[in-house]
Length: 442
Image 1 (cartoon, rainbow, N blue to C red):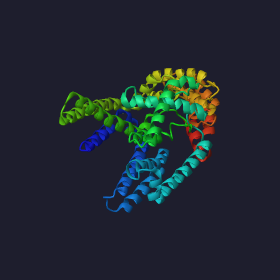
Image 2: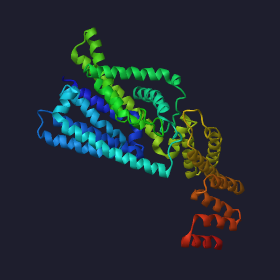
Image 3: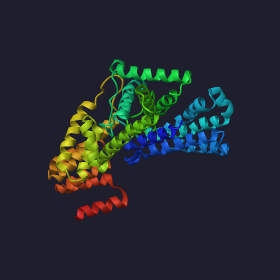
Image 4: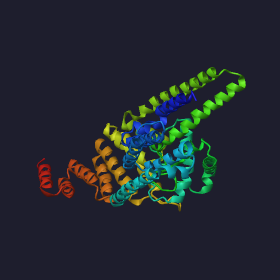
């Protein structure tokens, strides 16, 4: 009714200022999440205009919906949920049934679902490059079942952050669940929500639309398809909108029922609900401003992650790098030593569900020795730095940076011939000979 536009406004406002969105907006390399969200929402919006009987150029809006759907497929895998969300919208608000939706617009749905093939081709190509090039998460060896049961507690964590957005973290390095019993509580909660969603879809209850959208948009990253990392906050960028809708509309209905029970007038109820939403917006805005202070520098961000997730080796490695960049070599030395100590434990299989990726463990070990060597070199401990650079080269002989640093440390210690030999392995051809000659002249 008349309050519909206001409910939409407060929903959008809360979604925009929510602290959970900082990773998708402030962290630059995750802005493809917000770009995908843009294409996703424009796709849905154009479809709504296209099926509106009072809208002009309905064919044009449907064509634009398909165009933005295709563009979104080239942005991020989550876009695969867009055709399903549009079908759900048609089912709940336009056609009234899935059969009716397909009967009226089967060509559009066929084209949209075929556009997923574009995404599939990109995924296959990227997967081949990933396999050839290596790299990835420390949990790259996980299987579907442990990933699936772990997602139950991850989704519960997402829901907690949607309601109480404190203790946000850029890089969780969430460990896989050891067994189903370890996540029984969160698993039952998620199963219960799924049952409610299916019931609402079957009974054509409107509450099923935001619930289904939440699970559909999360499905590519939080289901049985194992990814390198269990949890990232940017995965909640679009699903958060569905949760905000549920709480804004549900909160308003709750205030309305309480007001009617107390005999309040309708305008008083609306002002009360608007005031509550305003308080939430101001509170979330303040939390978002505070959260953004962590993004002021690489050091502050990775220090925040290391404090909240002290077992996160990847975060500790990034922190050591940032400390070296700002000249805090002594602290970088202690952090690098801590990494090597942690890797002595994390380099072994933790349980039968998965094993840590050996190549990545070697990468972390080599990087830690290399950064420790740099820190020692900055502190004037040249001989000790040579030992760590040599160990980094031993672990990963193809690491040109570590070999270069080893040659530099050897040169500074007066071992010019050994330095030339190391640098000769890094640089080849005319450029390598010129650098070797320049170093010999020095």
